[in-house]
Length: 228
Image (cartoon, rainbow, N blue to C red; front, top):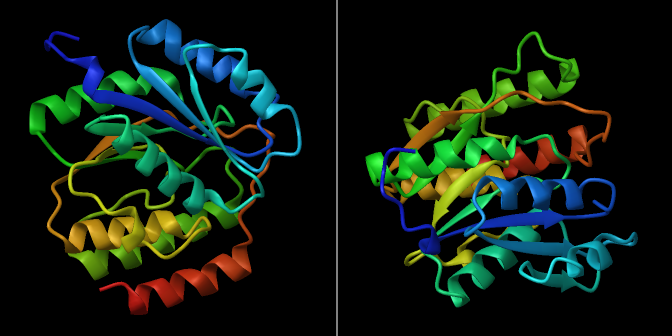
């Protein structure tokens, strides 16, 4: 990276639920990429060894929910913890290795160049191993949110994103599940937050998804009509 960056104002936040098989590799990849970058893991009530593995990394901040509360709840906890620790920007990355940590540099470079408050990872999901129902759901959701916000949103369901923390109130967001990510996009764009996208590799492994297509579609429709 040619830019002179103060990495102390950035942190990586990893929402994790039963990520014992992948969390160690992810943390090591982030640490090897940018050793001075702080890492925060939000263990969302895991029933496996996620917390014990993370605790072996002395430099990683670990915060745990006693019970599983949902992806949105974990992200909101991550926002509060990052703010409390004085960080200006948080890069959220999923714990299942479906996001390439190498893209963190591109998120930071884009933030430094454009001074934007929100950056969303954008995958090329067509022609990949992602199941058709996931491709269809993401395409429809992104199209509807684009109409709603007046901004072109290509990958609304991507959890890989950079968020500006200054004056951000996580209590403004009501959804604790996966639909938090759609709610967040809508409300942030409506609030006039500057927005950019970063192309990221499309990785779809065999870890599966916790998304319930029927129920989460219903929740998205509710968010669409209520998020002003």
